[in-house]
Length: 140
Image (tube, rainbow, N blue to C red):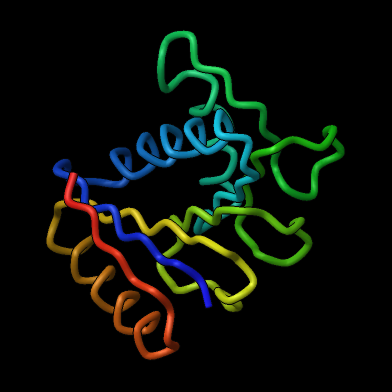
């Protein structure tokens, strides 16, 4: 079973989730962990690819879009779970629970402070709980 951490952000909106995903991926990379960031669409993956270079002055997070011909990197981004290498942390920006959450040791769910974000996270929380995963909540 996976350890699932829900990070409840103070800021509303998708951009807050994306920026926090970049910060979390950078922290995991610096701790020598491998990360996959699951996005809702391929366009979202492309946006996150750009954001990982610009979210903070001086940031450096070696990454690649999953399925691309780029060299291997400790952080991958994509809109699907298939074809990704095993990783230490899955950062889920998608609306649904991953199809196979048990294949990831840790999963990070990022919850924006708006009503829709909280409502969607409650659904995911219940799904993980019903599957028997270890759940933690962090209010930021």
